[in-house]
Image 1: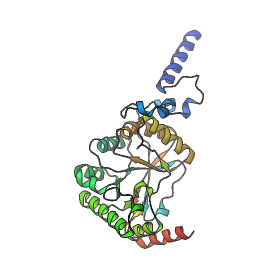
Image 2 (image 1 turned 120 degrees about the vertical axis):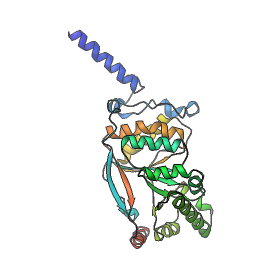
Image 3 (image 1 turned 30 degrees about the vertical axis):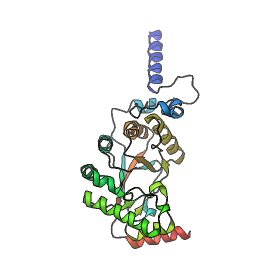
Image 4 (image 1 turned 90 degrees about the horizontal axis):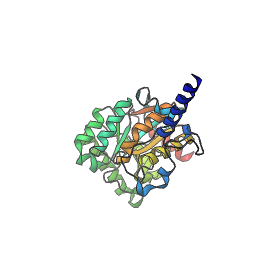
Amino acid sequence: MSVRVLCVAAALACLLSSCANRSQTETGSLASAFAPAKALSSPKKANADDPVALTPAAWGRFSSPRGLSGRTIDVSAISDIRLRDKEVVLTFDDGPMPKKTERILATLDEYGVKATFLMVGEMAKAHPEVARAVVDAGHTIGSHTFRHADLANLSFDAAVAEIQKGRNAVTSVTHDEADFFRFPYLADSRKLRQWVGTHGMVVMDVQVDSKDYFGVSPAAVATRTTNALRAERKGIILLHDIHNRTAAMLPALLTQLKAEGYKVVQLRHGRGHAPMLTAALDRASHG
């Protein structure tokens, strides 16, 4: 009987090891790695639809995706985004993009969590039905300029016009207020941040950059994001809903977040508090 038990235990260990796609003899704990190290070192061979290997801690929970949703925070200033330990905000830039955005929406719905989509104005106008699907699913929206311009290379007036045009495009297509804003390339300035604040928008900063815009595998994106989040323990995660690799890795990332005890927080804009936002930005800029 004891021999049979040992055989079953050995077989289970091998199964878990293969599920994580790592040899048990490799250095590091299986529970601390998302996928094999070669996923980060072989970008030229990456396939944007490759599956992502789960760790044993997450593997057994894949069939039960619920329980990841956290609280909702009403935000009228960037200072209102006060995340607790192991709380994250999912944000998606640059969309909407047919098929990819819709695939991401389906995953978010499966896991019962909400995200913030910072839409490029010309993308929203090109794909209005997808933009509206984001709002209809109960997610938060914002803008990301009209054509994803690097505002650092524009005059102040031209940058303001680009921000306004993007916000108006997203609002007109979705019939919802695009009250959050993210600077393309995170290229901001104090003057532009103050302008955004005085016009009723909240700037979305980033604590965890998935860097999913690099041509790597979904496993590499998941590994990088998870490792960065473990170092921060909370924060706003930057993703993009225009890449297959992001859509492919999202179920595994969310499963891993749940396994490690994280909660996904939704942001909701508290409209009508622009003066509070301006004061908060002024304090931050002089702090």
